[in-house]
Amino acid sequence: MITAGIREVKNNLSRYLTQVKAGEDVVITDSGLPVARIVKENQRNNGIRNALLPLIRNGVITLPSRRINKGNLGTVNSHGKLISEMVTEDRR
Image 1 (cartoon, rainbow, N blue to C red):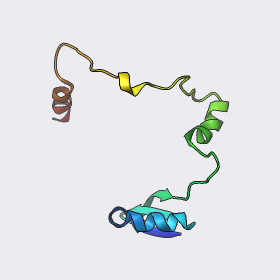
Image 2 (tube, rainbow, N blue to C red):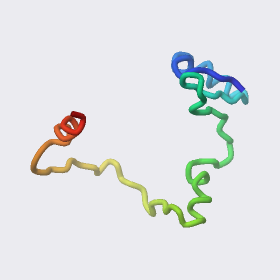
Image 3 (cartoon, rainbow, N blue to C red):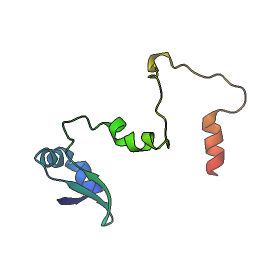
Image 4 (cartoon, helix red, strand yellow):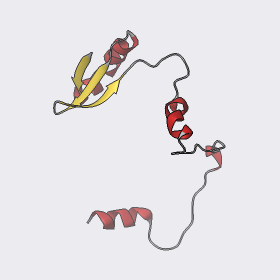
């Protein structure tokens, strides 16, 4: 197992991904504390849906029944303040 800081992984991502492809796990740390892990993806169907199967079976979550057509997303017209203005006010 390889341990590296965020900046180190960011600056050398290709090198770390090559090591992951070879079977190494990479633990990413922030100020010395582990925050994430990069592991080799199993070639079998281990997508997000399979990872969520236990939650689906227990009725904790429900996946969408259809795909979202992202090409048809449009703008929303509304009256009042812009969202960016509301965010700026909220940050004050």
